[in-house]
Image (cartoon, rainbow, N blue to C red; front, side, top):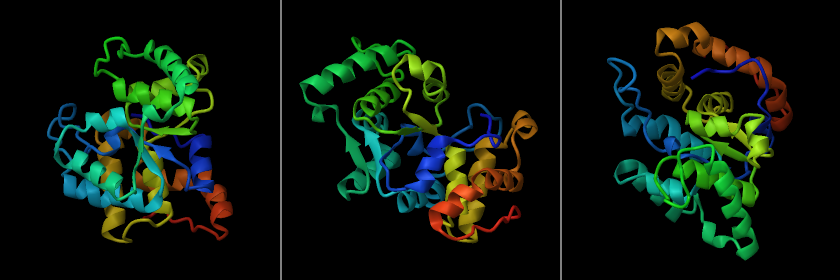
Length: 250
C-alpha cells in the first residue's frame, strides 16, 4: 500500500487538534498484521508484540475508540476478540449498536447501507460476511453522524475516496490509515523512547517497506518521519502549544 507524505489529510489534522473525538476502527486494527500469504518468508506479527507496540499506545492516546458490533463479530475467537471484549467491559472501547437508532434514523441507516453495499460484495438481504463490517460501520458513521473511519482495508479506503464517497453519502467522513497513526504515536511520544520507537519502526517496515515495490515508492522510516513532520509540524505545534522538535533520525 502506498504511503502519502505529499498532502495533508484533513481527518488526521482534526484528530491531532482534538484527540478526544470518537474514532471508529476496522477489524484489522485488532488483528496482528500478517503478510505471510503475500510476502515469501514473512512471518505474522506475534500478538504480544502487536499489543505492546500498537494496541496499548492506541488506547493510551485515544480515549474514545469505537468498534461496530458487526466488526466485533469478525474477530472470531482468540486474543484479538478477547482483547476487544476486555476493553469494552473496561469502558475503554465504545461498542456501536444499530439498535440505538430510533425508527426514522434506522430507516435512513438502512437506506444508506444499501447504497454503500452496492459498491461492495456485501448484500444486505443475504447478510453475507463479505465486506459486512466495513459497510455496517460506514452506514452507522453516516447516520450518527461521526467523522472518521480507520482501516487498512483497501476496499474500505476506496469507499472514502472522492468522488465515490460523495455519491454514496459519505462526503463528510474522513479516513485515517495505519501509517498516519504510527507517525502520530511516534511524534506525540506515546511509546517508550527506546523499544517502543523500535517497535513502531518495525511495524512501519513490515507494513509499508517490505517489498522491492514498496521500497521504490514509499520512504524508509527516517524519511517518512521527516516528510510527515514537514506536513504536520505546525498542526501539532498549534495543538500542543509547544514546539515539536524535528528528529528524522529516530
